[in-house]
Image (cartoon, rainbow, N blue to C red; front, side, top):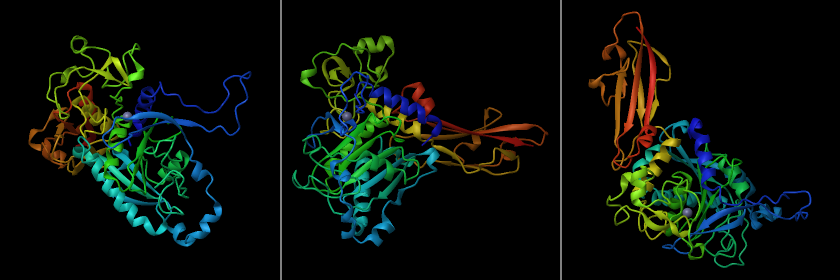
Length: 451
Ligand SMILES: [Zn+2]
């Protein structure tokens, strides 16, 4: 994570879900009926009824009926010593840089016993590989750190699998048939928070539940009491479930709207949506206002077809538009973000990550001292990182691309003055067109050079 940007991301995330009710169970006024003492807090969760379906959103409990009632005696049934040794163990799946300059993802297992932790690690790797096979994740994995948190469950498998009446005692209480919906895997969010805290500075959480059955969910609008941007759940051994996480991270990191609709919602009459992929404006109006995705209008889109303004978005079939006919933010029948979505995702990565970090951490160096930087190793694909060096604001062109330089060799003379050395990495990807997004994808480091 990038602490400086964290508040921005959280604030934007809250704005995204401002319309979503979060019930706390607290009476609003003194003359209101007394709340039930058993009333549980609820949050919004999104699920996909099938592997190629459009999503749905429902209100679900923040707690799990299974983890909450887990019998304490069950711990006697497992190997207590083995569980104590491994519960919450953190394994590095991918570490590409310091957490301060990376988007940190915590993948937590549920329904794995102490003896099944190797299975969990294999499943976590496999599902994350599927998520990051989708662009723009694929090109930008060098901006992510991925941590696996091995939660030890008393029993193998999760509640509701294979059928609704099955109850399992698991570390996070994840379960199918949440809100009477088979495909919806809910989880105990307090336990998610507790296990996620074991990984360094998690920005995103993915819960991998031990099951072969299709399913998952995405939580949003969790509020500031959760230190990460989103939580996705998915089945461990069902590769069709991986696109659920790819979609949900679109909300958490790209701050994207759902592009699917409910017939019952009718015509949207509200203000311009805050999300970058939803608008009340027509293509002509976008262009004249230079708003939203006007820079992409008419382009051939990876999801198929041409970028335009297609009727129906943000749950409303009328009165609001989306950029393309289909996309990963509309249904899981495609694994493609559209071009505006792709731009929003890359911008989101750079809110949490920086492509440039200092290997030389001193801020003042001498003219004979070697200064070294690390540039994120991004995959060949969408990204185009360009490293350049500047002395007193003027580029030293022969140093382009060098990750180690000596200021004296870049023209800093022994004149007794203090000079400024700057390294700048720009991402010149074709996938960013918004100048603000391009600026956010540019990272600089500076040093004072004593001569
Ligand atoms: Zn969604």
